[in-house]
Length: 253
Image 1 (cartoon, rainbow, N blue to C red):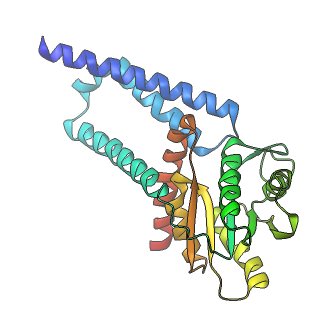
Image 2 (image 1 turned 90 degrees about the horizontal axis):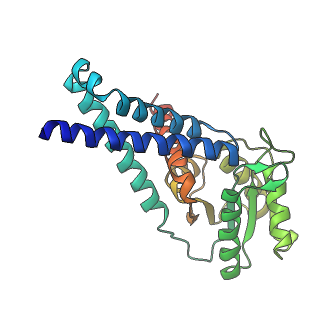
């Protein structure tokens, strides 16, 4: 009887988690630009839902070591995602940096997305404490985007009262690595070889962005984060965990 009760509880938990993840993936796909994080969330939800429906059959057919491996993998992702959010929310800016770099995110047509708007608001908050710093907006034009992300960001900042004279647009990048590499070229031209820079991105992205920045040759760096909207946390963290593993793979091999 006790075993049946535990199994039933596990089934219900898996069904609830699977349904919530599937709904989350669908909602985010409708509300924002499609990306691999949405696919990962959908697949994870489908796996949980499948497990909840066929749990008794799976337990009889699947070896115990497979269950343990899957559980360890899920726990590892949860720990990794939690660590990324915790690290990313511990800003270390001194507010005397020479420039602040806002990393691009998706836009809808010509309108900045909620994620990108939050990054820009964090940059504006920084600018209020360090108005002399240059503001680099970095991002090219991707699918479902009518203009470059950098141009959309510049327009947003100007509308919020930021002088266009201190804004530098980097409009070629299509990845975090290119964000930093191309922005460094522009900063080198403007500030010379020695300068300090703070970058702004979402909390979950801070850790990897720092590694990429140092690999691009930026040495005196700090960061300021923007919080991730709750319904984007799962897709973004899943995608980020995969991106970190891929980044380490490229560095090692």
